[in-house]
Length: 235
Image (cartoon, rainbow, N blue to C red):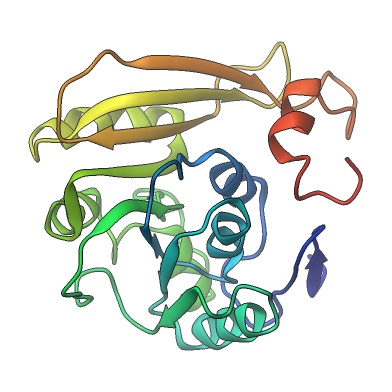
């Protein structure tokens, strides 16, 4: 069972109410997302508020964090209100499809639900958090097109196969892959996760690789420590 709280170097996250707990995927996206030059950031499905807090630590941007699950919304409000960045993070109880804003965003980030055909969790809230019934790829792309500035970026983390499908789908909405981080849990493992950045203009795609552990549990690679070192207490 996951702990009810998670302490980072500059903030802490309570998670007993949230349907989606703190996990490696969220930490990776929060640590890697390209915040350079971003004045406004939208965090879609903020859950505990983890990614919004990480991006606030890494930038001076104004951040809007949206969350449709009521208990998770309350949890993220609690975590963000206890942080030093409460004046720069607004938490809104909303789906991406229903959310609107008069100002556009320079960056949209999301750790989206991605299971489509697997057995559903009997806990309805956890099932919604993990399955893409309520937030499909089309939903993400259509609404990102609506909410991003012309030069804005969409960045998300997905499993390998789903990420490759998403790249193909994104082109239909005028989004092209600019950067891709290929992530392996162990040196001998296959690539399990992709962090992908999209923009509206075509440009040369950059590609990087990250391995999380050397082979033994918690024997982390230098690259992983460097990426997450501003956050994890033990690095």
